[in-house]
Length: 84
Image 1 (cartoon, rainbow, N blue to C red):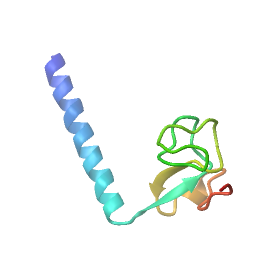
Image 2 (cartoon, rainbow, N blue to C red):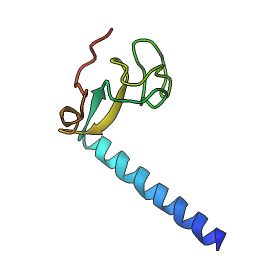
Image 3 (cartoon, rainbow, N blue to C red):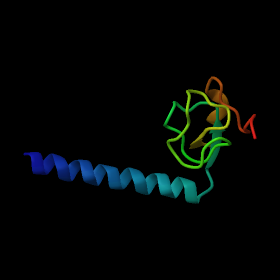
Image 4 (cartoon, one colour):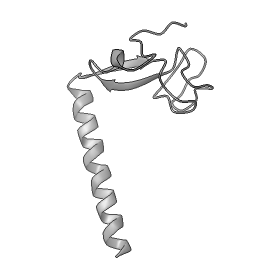
């Protein structure tokens, strides 16, 4: 039973990653600044050099990749960084 669940989880993850890569390849994503939780940002910020290194929630220079048109619907979401 555990083996079946493990295989199903792995397959689901692979499918989700494939879908995310396809969306990104099509250019249907945008950077949304100021909405990530501490340590959950997607990549480089003005004060850190790697994903998952934002020091505080809603850091103005930290961003997440979101589908185009979504960022401005999120409270606090901005399409440009307000810091360096």
